[in-house]
Length: 551
Ligand code: 4AD
Image 1 (tube, rainbow, N blue to C red):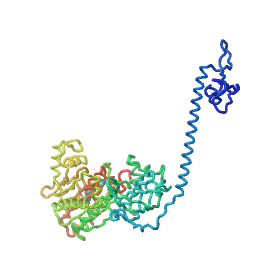
Image 2 (image 1 turned 120 degrees about the vertical axis):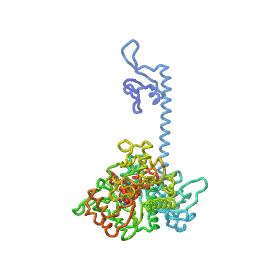
Image 3 (image 1 turned 60 degrees about the vertical axis):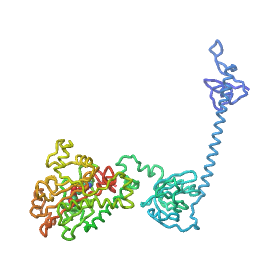
Image 4 (image 1 turned 60 degrees about the horizontal axis):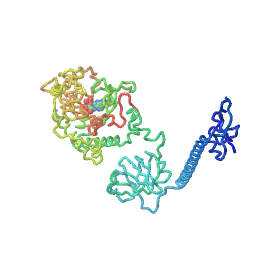
C-alpha cells in the first residue's frame, strides 16, 4: 500500500485518504495513519525544475517513524484524559443525584430544642437549642460545613456533618442568609478555638432567607478596601460588619451609662423640639427649612430649651439630634449628631467643672464594666486608659503660652495672641502631646457664644469650658450662662439677634432668675475617643456630612 505526502498542498487530517490526489502534509502523519504503507514524497526531480512523487529516503523514513510514534502516544494520552474526564463527570452527576435526594429533616425523637438568643449560649452548654440568625462566616470542607451564625447578641460556630454537610442547600448556602439552626451546644476541646469557646453540633437547620450568590453576593457589595463613599452607599450592609456593629453596641451602652449617671445625679430627661426658630451657635451653621410659610431651622443645640426647663423640673438633660451646616470637612464634624446636653440650676463654674469630671469618669466606668461593651472596647481600643479625677485644668491664656512655647502657630501661621481661636489642628497637637483629658477654661468672650457668663475677675473672658480628649480633641463644650436680664439683652443686641423672638428664653431671667450652667457633649466624638476610631463618621449609624444624606 502506498501513501503520498506533499508538504505544500497536503493536509494532516484523519479524513484525508493519502492518495496522490489527496496527499498528507508530513511523512510522520502519513505513517501515523497508515503505519504499513510505503511513503512517497513530492519533491524536485534531480537536475530539473519538475516536481514528482518518489519514495522517501531512508533517513527521512526513520525520522517519520519517530514522528508517527510521538503522534500515537499523544493520541493515546488524549483518549485517556477524555476517559478520565468522562468518569469524573459521571461521578459528579451521580453525587449530585445523590445530593438532590438528601432532604434535611428534623429527628422528632430528639429533645425539644429551646429557642434562645446567643447571649444565653453559655447557660445552655450540653442543651439542645434553636438559634436564628445570619450566616456571618461559611466554610465548606469535605464532609463538614462550618457556619458562624450571628444574631446581634453574639456569634456561634455551628458544625454540620453527614447529610447536613452534603445536602444541596448547604452547598448553595451564602453569607448573610438567615437560618433557623438546631443542635447541642458543646464546649470546645482544648486547642480548638471559636467564639465563646463553644460550638453547636448541628442536627437540623432550615433556610429562612437565602442571600444572593454571584455578582450580588454580600462580599461583592461590601469589599473591605473599597472606596469609603461606596461603603457609605452600602451602609445598611456594612453595619453588619464586626467593627461597625461593635461601635454601635458601645454607643448604645454609652447612652445608657449617661442616663444612669444623670438619674444618680437627679437630672430629669426632657425631649426638646428639633424644629426651632432661634439660633444658638451662630448663623453660619444653620440648616434653614420652610415651616408652613414661616422660616424655621433644624436645632443646633437644645440648650436654650433646657434652660427654660430649670424652673419647671430642676436640673435637666436631653439626648437629642443637633444639626450643623458645617462647611468643614474634618474627621470630627457631622451635619447631624447626637447631642447629650444638660443644664444645672444654682451652681457655680467650679460645680460645673466637677460635674463634668464625674460625668465622664463615671459614664466611662459604667461602659467598661458592661459585659457587652467592656470587652468590645478592649478589642477596639486595647490601650484605652480610663480618665481619672481630677482632670488637668488649663486656662485658655495658658494654653496660648503652651502652644507658643511648643512653636505651634495660629491659623495665620503666627504665634498665638489673646483672642485667637485655637483651631482643630493646634488643639489636637496640644491634647495629643499632653495625652490626658483637659478642661480648657476661660475663653475670650468674642470667640464664644452670646449667652456665656463673663468671669468676675476678668470680664474679657467667660466662664466657659471645652473638654479635650487625646486623639479627638474637643468632645464637650459648656459654660455658665448670663443670668442677668439686661446683660443678656445687651448680648443679643451685640450679636444682632432678634431679641423679641427670644422672649421665651429671656423670660427665664425675668421670672425668677438663677445662676446656672450646662454643656453639650458630642456622642460620636466621645465614641471616637472610646473606641479609637479615626473619624466620627464611624461612630454614627447613618452619618450625615457635606454631600452625604443617603441612605
Ligand atoms: O461647642 P458646641 O457648639 O456647644 C453647644 O452647642 C452648646 N450650646 C452646648 C450646651 O452648652 N448645651 O457643641 C457641643 C459639643 C462639642 O463639644 C462637640 O462634641 C459636639 O457638640 N459637636 C459636634 N459633633 C459632631 N459634629 C459637629 N458638627 C459638632 N459640633 C459640635
